Amino acid sequence: MLAENIKTVEKNIKEACARANRSAADVTLIAVSKTKPVDMLCEVYDTGMREFGENYVQELVEKIDRLPKDIHWHMIGHLQRNKVKYIVGNVTIIHSVDSLRLAEEISKESVKKDVCTEILIEVNVAGEENKFGFTPENVFPELEKMAALPNVKIRGLMTSAPFVENPEENRKYFRQLKQLSVDINAKNIDNIYMDTLSMGMTNDYVVAVEEGATMVRVGTAIFGARNYNK
Ligand SMILES: *Cc1c(COP(=O)(O)O)cnc(C)c1O
Image 1: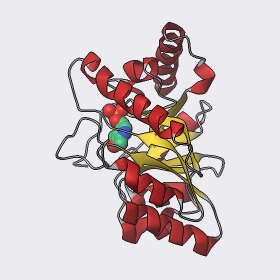
Image 2: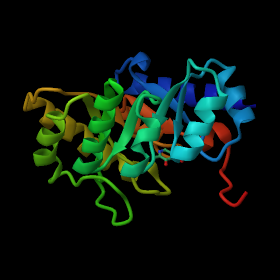
Image 3: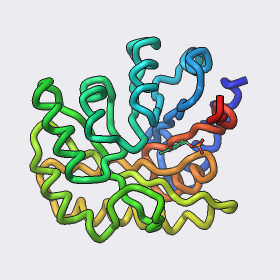
Image 4: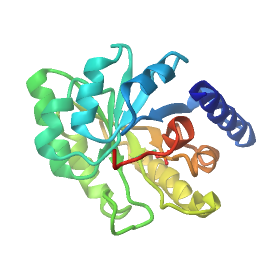
């Protein structure tokens, strides 16, 4: 059943790429497994999936411990500075870097462990009050400071668009994030790559791919609805 879900999502991504004249190989599907039990992750792993996204540090660390070592773990949730030490060295990329102080902590811990940590800068393009992330305006001055930090590599931008009934409403935000990455790239700042755009969730990943997403974070469409009360 979960294998069918993944096939459907992959097919939708492929078709969105075709419409946008993009190669499907340029889009990475991340299976967002937060709140889901290990046996479900195993089922998805057995279909060949190796990219998993998690939001909560403790849950992430437990799952890393219990699942195969060839999984690429994506930290996609808000990260507190005092928890950075638990994930640096254990995850492939941190999507949710939303402050200079967090980036500094990731750098410090990466130096300590002698690893290089790849990060994305979270931008709150829609300006939602309840969401984390830089505004498109204040990301620039902070970016240069983050780029100067040792042992972190800035690979691109991430956003979570608003929850909307019609995903077309989010197209403008995905376009804005893409444009922002183009603008940042044009500045040729050392240690900033901008080859990754993490945008699009179950509701709007098709539109996000049409607008240039290179990573989509899909939970519900793969694992089914989440129950936070269990
Ligand atoms: C939970 C979550 C997702 C996946 O959401 P779905 O709507 O279930 O696909 C993607 N990104 C972030 C940051 C999340 O917290």
